[in-house]
Length: 480
Ligand code: SAH
Image 1 (cartoon, rainbow, N blue to C red):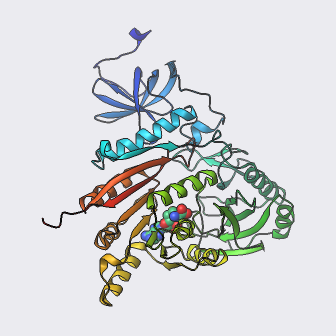
Image 2: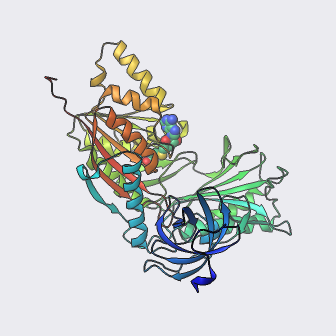
């Protein structure tokens, strides 16, 4: 067979088919193969596989090829449960066994830390990745489904085909909790029955943009938020009557987003029915969650992640601990239990999340936690300036600093301030190992030593991975 396909240097052209041996996986879970000086990225191919692929894009040194046929499958290959897994792109690893996914994620963290972070892993305690105990289906507690019109003009929902705004219609998402799928179904029935127009991106007309649903795992409370390009929803009473009957329904909201933007939520919310928030429990602590607030999407894994962060912080009971990028204060309250004679200071940019954080501390009777709203890089720098101006030593302001930034990692100014505060320990919780590695390189250059690492699978079937690391301040020889 192989004689029909080029394997060595000839002029490659677009649409040509070649045989490739896949030897690695890229950051988005795509297969990587090397072919006569070229690196090819092949979505859906796995390491160890021999595949037939069609060249779809060629650059000088690398190209993209479409998987046409798997000639020799990997022992890790499985059949995806969801028919939409390939075009959707959200679950870029559904064709890989769960054990294979966990191995891929650990390798991704290891590769980033060594290549970008320059970390010598032989000197670090590497704890095995925290995988899910059961197969990772129906685990997500949050969905944001776009609504668009089909050819006949009827509202439909589904997902955008990877990297585009072309809606692929689907009813069920197997990584969402079934109550979320049922809620989306009920909203869609309402939209179709009452002929509520779907949003049209090209003309910026139509009304309903997204259906946003959240479900609290432990309390089973459900929140629905309809994002509209307008300031009201016709027949809202009929929607409320329908949704009220669903299991766990607690909160029904409208969000107004009249901007031409990819950002899902607009600036204002209206409560249509119920409470303006839902509540959930993690590790015995009850949390209030507003729609604008960040909340981890995988409830069972979240508890494992937070326990790891707490273990890495190794609190003695009287420390001052900072929780930066704290959201609704989930990690802050976990930490607060560990410092009955100390205190926790949480910093977060979203005002609604800080409101939740304060209410959460109060309703759990935790008096040793305080919160500041603002960009962590500014708030912490300003607090340090104020306190040092008042005569405090910069090194006495923090014993432990926990950071949990979004994918872009920590702001450089913040890292600089943390290095000046020189806490004994830093616990870094990260959802992107590449920016984690970049930030670790900086902190290690500022006198910190990387001690422990543990990855955690928060996003089964996707290529994303969460990581928790512990850094400690190096003891400097005083005589030097
Ligand atoms: N630790 C929390 C939140 C982590 S997600 C939890 O586990 O739930 C990251 C959080 O950082 C989000 O809540 C986001 O709103 C917030 N954020 C983003 N940029 C920020 C900044 N510059 N300063 C402070 N918080 C920020």
